[in-house]
Amino acid sequence: MDIAALIRTIPDHPSPGILFRDITTLLKDAGGFAWTIEALVERYRGQSLTKIAGVESRGFMFGAPLAVALGAGFVPIRKTGKLPASTIGLDYALEYGTDRLEMHTDALQPSERILLVDDLLATGGTARAAAQLLSQAGGEVIEAAFVIELPDLGGRTRLAEAGVTTFSLVSFGGH
Image (cartoon, rainbow, N blue to C red; front, side, top):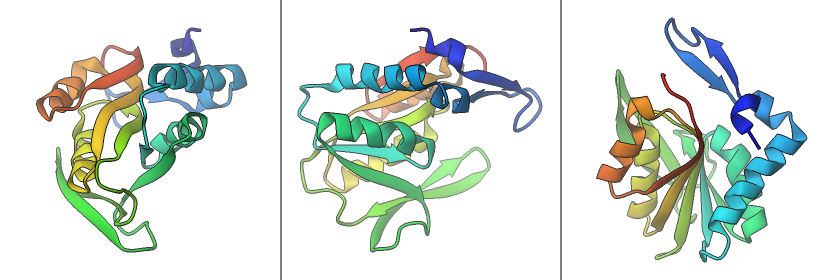
């Protein structure tokens, strides 16, 4: 299936010169959404994953159904202050400033095998921080999976430099 055709491109959002890749058009297409989840299931079936970690918020949309299909638990990785129980967190650099990711302190047991999931890989900053947070909590990040990759922004390289292998279903040139 050509899921790239189901992903809408919105020019100049959120700022001039940006081509925003909108997954809501993929999500509303039952066949396309199902195909996307099944393609990810097929890639990771039999890899003895214990947890799927999804990055807020669009990573939840793909990570949660993937976790169910693979018989794994789901770990939400959120922006600061969003989780109700005790958390561990990691501050990371953005182009202009810093941000923070958090997860519950009891989300992982040592040596769990984790797949990190998000909708889009751009610069890799958030995914790299999420992978680092999971590792600090004692997990082993097997791979980071994305529906969309924007290779021109270098995220795959940044994740590789951090020792994280990546996979994406579709790539779009530009940013």
